[in-house]
Length: 112
Image (spheres, rainbow, N blue to C red):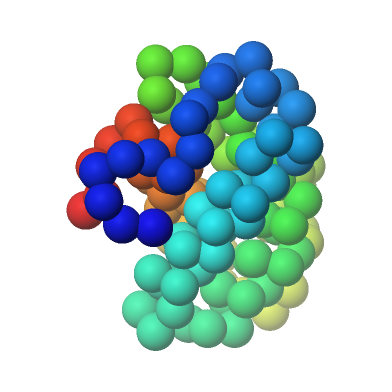
């Protein structure tokens, strides 16, 4: 969605039950982050992190318009045949993009 208005009015209390109230926005944030990285990083690494790590992650509202992505236990052990440095770099930028997309979708930050 484009424009200056957020897609959905954000309510921190509703975010406690995010999959009930904000499922579409969460899905869009993860998808947008994936698309932004597609073609910029190794697609096999991106896909593996998306399917084996981030599919089990939990978006968290930290307050003051800030979000984080809580990863499952032992994320590195979930992805085989990927260089450690590449894994860490792609995971880091992917989670940062998700956090920015959540901020943008909920109107806390202008689109870049």
